[in-house]
Amino acid sequence: MSPRVTSRRVSAPPFPLFSQDTFCQKGAEIIKALAHPLRLRIAARLAASPATVGTLADELGIAQATVSQQLAILRARNLVGPARAGERGPYRILERRVRHMLNCLHGCIQERIRGERS
Image (cartoon, rainbow, N blue to C red):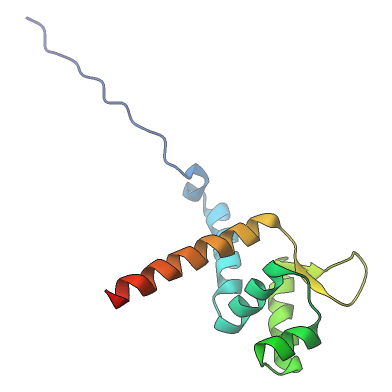
């Protein structure tokens, strides 16, 4: 009698590009840019609709200079930019996927807060 050979089906990892250093470096840059409470608040606000520095400062209760500094970091990572090409003025989230990421993060935070209460 010959030994029984079983084949185990190995499923592909859900995110195969995370095995690449360059890919992970880019991902870390995005996460680092958002890994500050003020930048996260600014990005979340801009996910709703474009806004000027003054509007962001007023709505979030932050000095305009601070908003500008935090926007510069988000701009440097191409997460936010002008609402219209070549203009100064309202800022917006540049990629739809950044909005999706913020939405996922929002859900994760809500679940953690609910878990802490129970």
